[in-house]
Image (cartoon, rainbow, N blue to C red):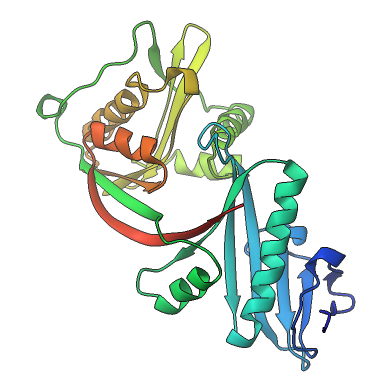
Length: 295
């Protein structure tokens, strides 16, 4: 059995559970100080050969999405680029770290990686590693035609939709924190402030008195806007709130001359796909596979 040796002075040494079997002795695997693909150091790995040439790198992006995936709230997206000789070693380190995270957080989860539809080598490799190809990143679109020409859903009785107050940095931080609690991306307030200047920007919140029901965030240019996040509190779901927010957003975009609204949803998120279809969106295509494996 050969152990994997950490490169000196380039990052943290790997904990004992990450030492792999059957690794070529001349390869060094380590956790780079700066991380990979924006992931933290402890969730990043790089491999070099005995000449110091990098032959692989990968990372884990961890999201806890209890409101979106209550059965498997731990969602870990993996990125991985490696020469064939380093693939198994890098995958082993990433998978072991994902299992370690699952144990630390004590919750069920799913590990997945994006794979282009035409990338048969990627797909075949991860299928061999126990992943499935039943999930995908699905693209939907709708024309923001005149409200009179569209089917209409109404907000739940007693709720009110308002334009989200994002005038201060604190309010922008609070709004983004709310979205992230539903599984949204970890955007910076500066990112949101820049998006607010675009014609396709819409941010609305739905309340029942002082109780938050949900939010929608849409970003985009004059030609096309995209739903970045639509989130509804679990107790208010199946009552048309998300559909009505999406349709009101179409009205706003139509008034600004933005002709199309698009959205993406993982295939396994059937609730999101049903909401988009009820709002009038049409399925366009599968953008990529989300090859996955339950943890």
